[in-house]
Length: 282
Image: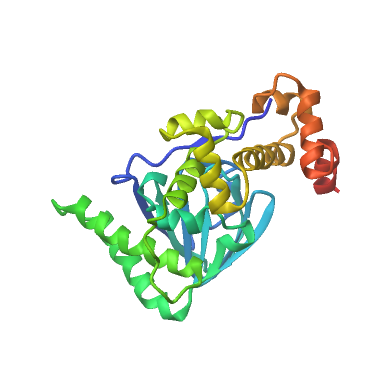
């Protein structure tokens, strides 16, 4: 049974932050370097020259110079192709480092929205911040960690501005419902989406009804909706990226009854697991 590999951050990461510059030589044979995989952290690709194609959760994405592409934790992705002059920065960030008001922007983006063109108004400051972060990452400065943390804070708010398409200040989340909703979304993973709402309420030290009220107030959707949504996305990934039988996928997801999984999948997506797989294989 094929498993999609999950990679942790590089041991070279400093306090949950890693940055590297990839030259054209590094990006040569881009598609052969890494198979389809997941990472348990956020990734930001900022291309400075050329172009490259990457697939993320079944969608081919073409990254051009002055584009920024965000990959969310546990999305399945791999390189497809790159031009001979392609070069740019790879930035890996542990999820706990991203402020709640920035998470609010990042976590709700569709795949088509995860690729963004850097607005000229932010370009110079963003690229300079990335350059300084990369230089500090390689330095031996005794205050290296503190400097990296400060530069990262500047970088993440610049990226949030780009993705929010806003020229105004990003407001700090003070609304309790918004904070609880964002913290709830952080807890959803491929190991928790079959848990009951009470499981998440306990983790957040609130009642189940209060959790439901906050999630509904912030997103217009229920806790159950977001858990089922996470399950369906994971099921679609496994149907697309593996040859595993539907029964095997159901068991991998934590279902004891594979027929119940198939019924639930069809109820939510309006198609069977096999028809979904065939649609993408034709």
